[in-house]
Length: 576
Image (cartoon, rainbow, N blue to C red; front, side, top):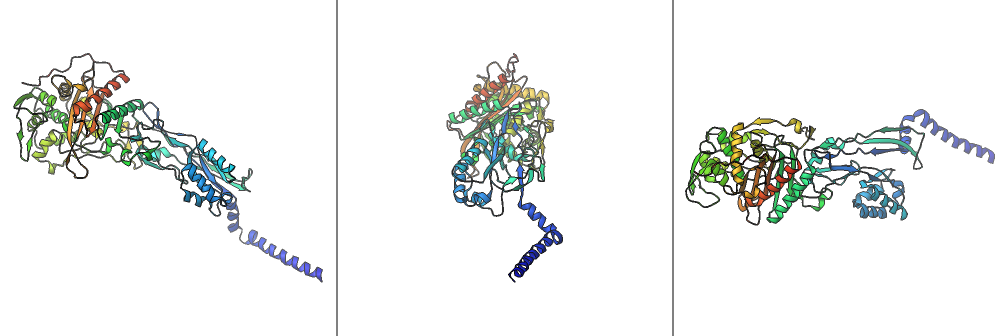
C-alpha cells in the first residue's frame, strides 16, 4: 500500500511538471522566452567622445580626457545602500538620495552612479568601497570635459553642468550649449547576456559603436585671448571700474581674434563664480557708445559729399536745441574747428552742427548699413541686437544725440565691426567667431564661410575718416596721446557715455569709457575696441581705455609680424 501511494504521489508531481513544461514550450513559449532573456541581459552605454573646441591654431580651448563612469549592481549594493551612498556622496559630490535610490533599484543589475569622473578618482573611490566591504561597484570608460586654459575664452566657450547619470553631458552655456548637437556625437550601446553576474562568452551579443562628436574650430587666438584678458583685468582693477570688455578683430577678414570680459570665470569650476560673470558681456551688455559714434557720423557725412576733413565749423560754448542745450565735455568760448578738429577734440556741438546737413533718414540709413540695431549672428547665445530707433521714433532731437553717441545702444562686437568698416576701406565685413562653417542647435549656420561684405563708405571717404582719426592720438591736437603705439600710425577715437542704470532705467550718474581704433592707420591690419564700465578713478576714454588699447595693439602687431609702414602720420589742420 505504501509503495502504491508513493507511485501515485510521484506521478502527480511529474504530471504537474509535465503540464508546466507543455505550457512553457508548447502553448505559450513566446511570452516567457523574452522574460528569461531579459533576466540575464545587460545593456550598457558606450559614451561618444565630445568634440574639442579649438582656437584658430588648433590649440584646445575645451577638450576631453580619460575618465570613468561608476556603475552599481543593486543586487549586491542594496543591503549596504545607506552607507555606500554616503561614501559616494562625500567622495564624488553626487546627490545622496538619488544614489541611494539607484543602489536599491529592485529587479535591476545595472545602475549608473556617476558619470565623467576623472579615471584615477573613480578607481580610488571603488577601491575604498571594496576595502570597507562594499561590493557591486565597477568602472567603465567615460571621457571627462576639461578646459586647459581655465578662464581663457571661458566667456565664449561656456561649460558643462554635472553629467546626468543616464544622458551624460549637460551643456549649460556658451559654445558648448549653442553647438551641442555637433559637439556631443551619438552614444553607442552594447547588449550581452550574463550568468551569476559574469558575461557569458559564447552567448549572443550586439554592439552599436559610438559616433564621436565633431570638433569646433574658432577664430580665437588663444595666446592673444589670454593677453587681452590680462590687460583688461589690470585696466579694470587699476581704474576701480565695475567691469569691462575688449575685442580684437582682423581688419581685413573680420575674424575675432580675442573677445575678453572681466570679471570672468574658470570654466573648470563655474559654480564658484557669480552667475553674472558666466556670460559674455561683450555680446549681451548694451550701452551707449558715446563719442566713438562720431567716427560713423562724420564718415557718413564725408561719404555723402556734405563735408571734407577741412570743412570749417564755428563751435559756440553751448548749442540750444529743442528739448535741452547741448554742451561739450570741456569748457570753451566760441572756437573755430575744422571737421578733423571736431573729431580730434571730440566736440559734441561741432558734430551736431555738421550732422545738420544730413537729409531726412540719411544718418539712420548709414548706421543700419554699419550694422547697428541688429545682431552680428556670430554664434553666441543671448546676443543683444542693441537699439537703433525706428524711423517713426527718429526725430530731429533724437538725431542730434545719436550723432554724438547718445539715444542708441550697441554691443561691443557690433561696434567694433562698425569701426572696422572704416579700417577695411569702407567695406563692412561680418565679424566671425567660427572658422569655416558650423550649424547651431537652432539650425542657424554661422562661420567665416557665411560672412558677407557690404560697401558702406567709398574708399576715399574711409581714408579721409582714418586720417581724421589719427589726429585723436596726436599729443598736440588730440585727446588720447596715451593710445599711441610707438613706431606705428594709429587711428582711433575715444568714447565717454552716461550709463543707464538697471533699476531706474535712467542715467544714474555712472559712465562708460572706451577707445576704438586700428593700425597701421594707412594700411590697417587689426581693429581693437576697449570698453570700461564705470571707472572709479574718474578717468575718460583717453586715459583709461586708451593705454589698454595701445598695449593690445602693440602686442598684436608684434605677434603677427606687422612692420611699421614708415609713412608720416596725418597732419590735417584741427583749427582755422
